[in-house]
Length: 216
Image (cartoon, rainbow, N blue to C red):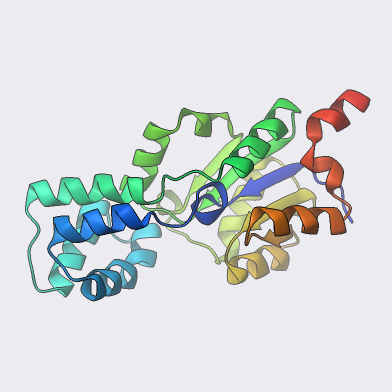
């Protein structure tokens, strides 16, 4: 197995936890839609929003149109803000591990399918994001996982050969796409399973990079 010189993280459901059910209910109240309507419309346009086909405001207006309603400017602003909160519960063990990697001078990056308003909301909310060596928010490139080119962009941004990058994502299709361009990759399900997989692959020292750095 090739030496890991950089670790590339997905944001949603890797650095953060799954969507916050409390915020989801708040969004239902703001929108005035039923759970079924909101769920359907939220996801049907989401990939296009993440890919930059729609701005945040255009995305929410598409949701309104799909549900045969209109959102006021106040509703739009509230929904955009709540959407950031929806994905803001942090997966603390992964965030802390990323920070330990950074302290040990292991290159780190974020590769996330995310729209413009979401990217602005998250980077404004979490100052620790700025410590990553390179971040790709898909909307800015008009690309999205699992398109191969976005992985090549991440490798170039990290100035690291794909074979020396470990990519972590919760979706199998994104893991397979990373493998297809030569990256090492692990599908994230929960932290215990992730650590077991790291150990199985002989990457246990990477879990405690500060110890490895001290020994080195």
